[in-house]
Image 1 (cartoon, one colour):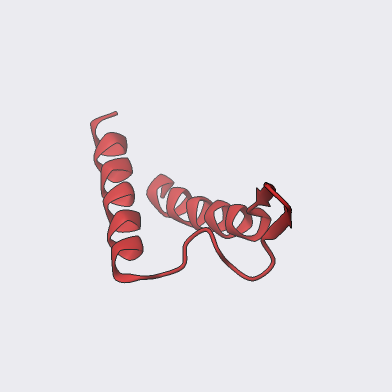
Image 2 (image 1 turned 60 degrees about the horizontal axis):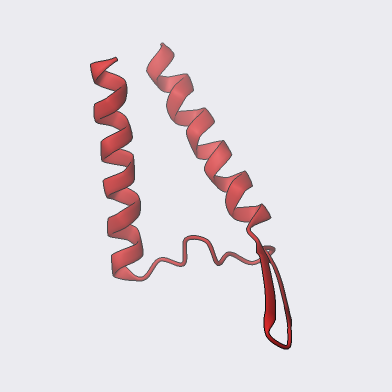
Length: 64
């Protein structure tokens, strides 16, 4: 359990650092954005797929 918490903390820190230096996490091509007047809808489908693939790869390496 301790290893998992450390890895989660490091992942959150890495994402924060990437966002600080300007990597567009959450605004990838393919994300759905609808803006009409004062209403806006954002659905980050490509971001979800990319994060899912990264999480799958990381967890598969940790299980070995």
